[in-house]
Image 1 (cartoon, rainbow, N blue to C red):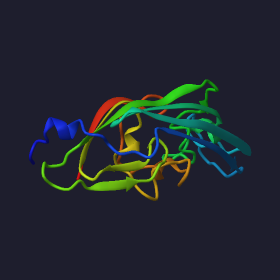
Image 2 (cartoon, rainbow, N blue to C red):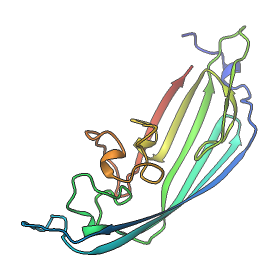
Image 3 (tube, rainbow, N blue to C red):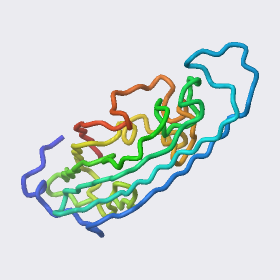
Length: 204
């Protein structure tokens, strides 16, 4: 691939918006009925009548301070408890808990990252663009069809890798932890499932 000239790299990236604000609220209510349990250990599913609820509240804030550079911040709060204190099932029934018995009611920063888009178009060729609709952590607009995207900061690996249209997010798809990602998929993450990292995407 030909290396783009500096004038192309530093060229203006057309955009239709400079800001993005969105929000998400999720409530999960689950009930566990009494059942016959011939064996019960400290990590077994408890055979008791129990109802629990978890709540999550997220703000998706984005700004494009200069062309090609976007900054995103997602403050979040999650609270509640899981049935059987979050244990007893290999594929736990509430993916928001991520193996925790309960969620502490303290606000935290879920994601905070910078995204830099670098146009990759050869000199002398007509500019090709791609219309990208806005979304959570995505300021929409007209972007170069061929581009390098560098993201650095705090985000979830599952936002970008092993993405599945039907099972990738417990807040909008399947609740069961086994269906959030591939069953054999494991990743290093903090208590909430987020990571510090650097990611580079080549789109053409």
